[in-house]
Image (cartoon, rainbow, N blue to C red):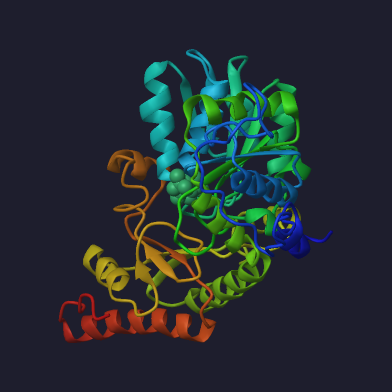
Length: 396
Ligand SMILES: Cc1ncc(COP(=O)(O)O)c(C=O)c1O
């Protein structure tokens, strides 16, 4: 079965009792038993639920994995992995550029209980080798990263992890299984904020962890029931619906991202464009090797003042100023004050996260509309500078 066929057919037969083409939402907390302890495979919906099970089946198929567990959010999924594998004194290595919530859970939740967190440039394999010690339990890779779309050679880091008996966890949220298959690159666990491209419509918050090896999966799966951060059946159903167009949507997201990166590159008001599809992106060659597409996100630094960045971000016609990404409707985000605000300013400066950075999540609209909206915003800044008037705030 090819990828697009899986998104529609894997684990999703018509409902056997009625023939309903789309299975109903099993909105139930519990299941009647025939005799004490004799159930039909379902006893309580925290433990298992047919709608969630359908979602887990298709997610595993898409990622080329044997096992999947769905969680109430991407961070709940992260927590399950970290809680399953880290004990006081253990070490975890991750990228400098990483989702702000991942930074927060590592540095504010796990570091205070004695876990050693090392943030390094995982694009530099020598730095990875130098950071690994006998206490390293996890190498945690985001590629492309949030928000600068930096690239790590996943297969090379996997080899280092395995040489030192550590696990490699890959957060595949940005690439999605459409463009990147981390298990083929040596991942032990793959993680998703399902909230983003997988669900795809900005209407639900969910996460997932996937694995190939039962022994590696089991401690993470155990926490799904034992700590209870599960998604509701309705949320799982929304994702099952969204997944059916995943490949189509990703193709459009990528088309739009490319058009935007090309239009912004070289503009006098744009200091730098981050898009792995651009040949001058430092990770371009590795991305071309390990991904089948460059993804749908674009970030860029405005050559301007803070007020100009703020006015630009809050006055776009088609890019709503909002956290999150990966939906059909375009979003713009100012990481320093939004998604990455949980990183203190000094740490942001150290990590190279500029206050001038804007992150775009182009939706599925027409690329010409999106590009002209952004170019119009830049032209507004130029006009305001030439007339010495402040840039107009939200005109949307
Ligand atoms: C790369 C990445 N991983 C994990 C998460 C956390 O997911 P959630 O917001 O669903 O908890 C996010 C959220 O933005 C993300 O961008």
